[in-house]
Image (cartoon, rainbow, N blue to C red):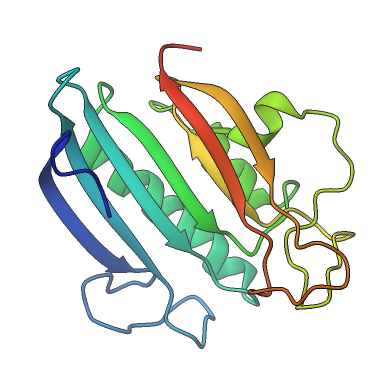
Length: 183
C-alpha cells in the first residue's frame, strides 16, 4: 500500500530467491520453501525523488540460500535504483545481525544500507524479534527496516506484545519513522 496522491508507481516487481527468480515458487540453494522479494519503485510527487521499497523474506534453514539471496537482492537494487534512489529494504531475514548474509547486505554500496533500529539503539541487548508466539525476546533480531544513506532515522523500535496477552504473530514487528536527508 502507498499514498497514490503523493507517490506515482514507476515499477513493481516480485522475484523468488532462486537461480530462476522469475519462475513462480522456484527454490534453489537449499531452501525447500519458496522465498520472495516484492519491490516497488515510486516517484515522490512532492520532492521528485525516486524511492525503492523492497520487502524480503529469506529462508529460515539454509545459510547458502541466505547468502545467495543477499547477493541477488544487492544486484536487483543496483539495477533498479542506481545511486540516486532512496532505498528501503524491509524484511524477515531469518538471520541475526552477525550472520554473514545480513552483514553482506549492509556492507555493499551504492546504497549504504543501515539497520534503522541500530542507528538509534546501537547498544540495545534485548533485541530478539522471533517470539514463537511465546513473548520471548531473548533471541536474535532477524527482522529489520534497512535504510539507504538518503534517509534520516527519526524513530525506530521493536513493538512487543504486552505480557499475558496473545501475540498476533510469531515475530515482533520492527518499525521506523524516517525523513528524507543524508545521514
